[in-house]
Image (tube, rainbow, N blue to C red; front, side, top):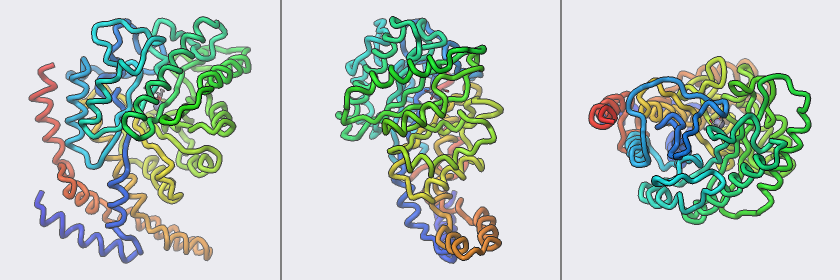
Length: 418
Ligand code: RNT
Ligand code: ZN
C-alpha cells in the first residue's frame, strides 16, 4: 500500500476524530504500550514437549483440525513465534504452559519440573524482546483424571500441589530474570461428568490446596486463578466455578482470570470488568471466541471483544489488566491464527482508545440519552481503520491484508516442509 495514501488518510482521520474531542496521536501512543501475552499453545495444538505420552482429552479441552505444519519441537515453536513477531506491532509477552519445558530427551514428571528446564526459554525470550508468563498444567497427564487439586486422594492431590508450587517458583525465576513480574495462571479442570452429591467437599479441598500453594509469598510473580463453566466429559459440575474463584480472589486478593469462553454465551464479560476492579487487585484476560461452547476459535474483532476493550479503556484500567490470548484452532494455518487474533485484539483496544468518551459522558450526565445513543452509533463508523493502518505503517509491519501474503510465504518456505 502506498505510504502517502496511508498518511493522508491518517491526517483526515485525525481531523475527523478531533471534531469529537479525540486525540488520535495520544491513542496511538497508548496502543503502542499495550502488551499482549501470546499463548504458546496455538502453535502445536496444546501438545507440549513432555515425553510422558499424555493426551489432551484428559482435561476437558480439545483442539480440533489437522492442518499441516504444526510445531513439533521447541525450535519450531520459537521459529513460529519469531515469524508472528514480524507481523505485529508493539512489544509483547509469551505465555508458556508447564508442559513446554526444555526437557531434552528426558522424562521429567510434573512434580519434578524446575526453573532449569526453562533456562533456554528465558535466554531466547530476552533475545527476542519478549517477557514470559506461565501456566501450571493439570490436563493431559496419567494423574489428571477428573480431579487434581480437589482430589480427596491425598497422594494425587499432593502431586498436583507440588506441581503448582514448582510452577510458582519457575514463574518467580522468570520474573527475576526479566525484571518484570511473571503472570502465572492456575486453571484446573476438576469436575464431574455426572451428578455429584459432594459439591461442597471438593470445593473445600480445592480451597485448602490453593491456600497451601499460595502460602509462600513471592515477589516477582503474580498469581491468577481461572474459572470455567464446564468441560467436555465434565459437564455436570466444575469445582473451580466463577463464584468459587471470584470469592477466593476477593478474599485473598488474587487476580481472577476472565476467559471469554468460560461463561454462559449470553453473559457479558465486559460488564465484569468494573466489578472486579473494585474487589480484586488486577485482572487477567484470556481472550478467546466461543462458538456454541468453549470452542476456542480464533479471536476476531466482534462486538464482544470491542465492548470488553471499551469497558477497560472507559475505566482507564489498562495498567491493571493483563491481556492474554487463549485459543487453539488446528484447522487453519496456525501462524495466521496467531496474527489474526493479536491484530484483532489490538484493533479492539484502539477502538476503545478512540471512543469520544468525554462527549458521551457529558450527554449522560445531562440526561441526554438520545444524543448518547446517536453518538455511540456514529462512533462505530468513525475511521478507526485509517488510524490502524497508520499504526502498522509507523511500526514498519504489513498494513491491512498485506500480511496474508507474508503468511503464505512462510507456509510455503517453512511450514510445508515440516
Ligand atoms: C481451559 C482454559 C485454560 C486453557 C489453557 C491451555 O478451558 O481456558 O486457560 O485453555 O491453559
Ligand atoms: Zn483460558
